[in-house]
Image (cartoon, rainbow, N blue to C red; front, side, top):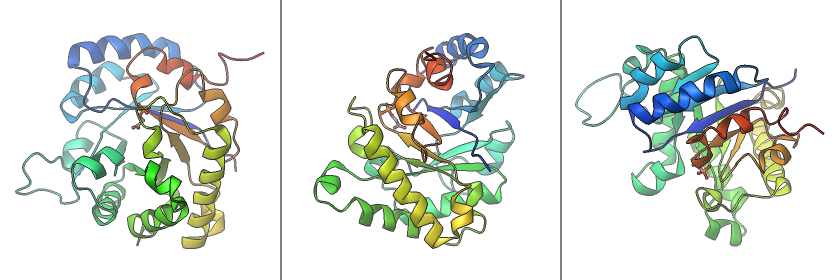
Length: 252
Ligand code: PGA
């Protein structure tokens, strides 16, 4: 069964209700004929307004994080019910910026991923090595650890979207080459096959993320194991539509 490509934006701590509304209104007609699933993961406070703007379109609104507990004394956190109330379908979990700046660990990534699944939403669980780790030749070891702990105990792995985001490529303008991204993502798929089952691994959507843009998306998307992208800075402008239409804009 062919995997349906999935292009998701990650606004991070950018945009306001005003600028976000303007952008989504601009994007709606541009992405309406996409041959892939499309989502924009936005800051939690923007979810109600952006959901309203995107209503009736093929743009799903996602969140950038979620707590694993259903409720309680967790100042600043967002629960599954709060997201579900607005019809949120996707939640980014374990982004490298959460890991780097906010103490996210493989263990908390695991708890959050499982909580998103239990709530009937789709986690976009992020993994990826730092530059130091790649240069030190331990990329596979790092990915093994992130997958083994981060995905431990998940019943149906096909319900998880994995985003492979080499930390050295995020926001740096330094994209992994098509071959590097393909090779690493094929490795991740093989590892998922070992941890779960090879047949399930064939169904798992694995995105590439890290300076993906309108110019490099076609080559990345042409790789057999790359099923989509998690797009940061290029999702803050209408150019995002070109990535979504990666198979149309550049036709010969
Ligand atoms: P970038 O971010 O596209 O700006 O590199 C990607 C991400 O962090 O998800």
